[in-house]
Amino acid sequence: SHVHAMSRRLLMPNQEPEKKEANNLMNAKVPDKKDREGDFEVSILLHGSWHQKRMTYSKKIITFSRVNTDDVLDIIPMKEIVQVYDSAPVETNNIRTRRKSDVTELIAEASNVFKVETIPDGFNLGRSYHLKAHSISDRHLIIQNLKDFSEHARNREMARTKFKMFQIKVQRIFDSDISQQFIGILILANFLINILSAQQDSKLRDHNGHLTDKGKMFERINLAFTLVFAIELLVNLFAHWFNAFVRNFWNLLDVVLIVLSLGAVLESNWIILRFLRTLRVLRLFGSFSSMRTMLKALGLSVNKMACYFIILSVLASIYALIGVSLYALDAPNSFGAFDRSFMTMFRILAGDTWVDEIPWLLEDGTLNSKFSMFVVSYVVIVNWVVLQIGTAVLLDSFMRASMELESREMQKNLHARRLIGFDQEQEPLSELLGQLSRDFTSSDDLSRRLMQLYKIMMHDTSGALSCEDFAAALRKMGFEHSVHFTPSDFASFTRNGALCDADGKLDEAGFEAAMREQLLRFSIARLAEVGACWMRMEIQLWV
Image (cartoon, rainbow, N blue to C red; front, side):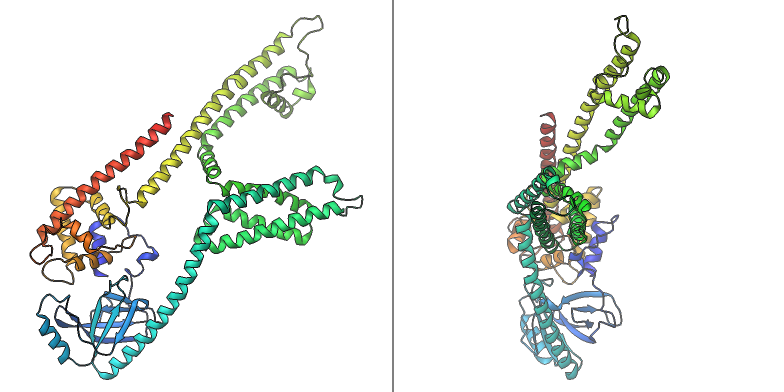
């Protein structure tokens, strides 16, 4: 809509607006010809006078635009139409530019008038549209179409809402701690069964390779676990359909393991089946948030870990080359080639204290100082110094990565609360204030932006800005979350009416004063919240 487009250009001049499903109505266009069910020129009552508009509708939406253009000025979703009246007396509570008696007389004198009412909490905030068709046949056709399409849209939305509510309930149950802990217990139980099966492997098959009674019992138990996990996967898919499911790595891992497990059961492939059953325990990492955090922290530490392993490999390779040069003839099994020498150095790194092929004492009983210095220097440099320092560096990297993940989570929570000290429901202007606070460069620039914003909000009104006008303009600006601006919010915004005129409305000066006061509160609350966030992070880092 016009208000949405201009407000986005004003508040976010250097940012491309996000294309989200919640904003589809804001970006609505005139229905395509293939979807179009009606295209009429009608008159709409605005501020006490009739204005010629183009009315186009499909089975889902009504659009109003200028005559002979596709420039959408207003829309009505079919599912939000409460009733369509053939003719009805006009409600003049919202008429400001003419006397109510004059407007009522204007409606009474007009012919082919009909009225469209919308739901109070919908996109149009309960607005009633008084429309006038050019002929009786046009009016009858439009009314009948709107009644049929709106009823069908409401029924479809009701069914969709019931399904969505059921899906949300399933999701809450599935994501609850009790459910996830129960799934984790099942995974552990399946892993223990695999351990017992491996321990008694020789008793599960006879000399012909056929399953024994005990083997068949384990097979039935594992098949039961596979079916339970398959059902759990289907419930997960239903609860998080579709994007949330496929964006989760652990869900994709579940799909692969379950599909391959079922395939291995059908093919009776014993080796693949046992391998897949062993991998099921990896799902524990996805079931518990603490394990996921550890894995993410390890992932963020990969670069330092790679450097550390390269250093160890280089040192081991140097000593392996020296070993080949000095001891290839004396100990061919340990140092006869580079690969043998490297594995010898790796065994010492892993805790093997000596190379048995070369004695540490000579035949005369004296110390084999040459080889002893070779091994001792390797143990001191690699095992005692590099290994210990590397462990400390990796631990520090892991801790910092964990703090970074926690910082991201805090930032995510801050963004959800609009980086202010209260919730979206308590502060409906948070998105508007956040965008304004990021964009203006000086006090004069802020005044210019606020005046432009005021003019945008006055797009379809005249005089001063009322609570209804302000709420309707906010609703059509296309913010990420729906804005519910109530009369109590307007009273707080205007200091209980102190900034309003005698009619309880805001003029330009009052609007600017109110917005500046809200911006100051927003900035102070944001700084306090961010400061508290960093203070918590510093305390945890020192601890």
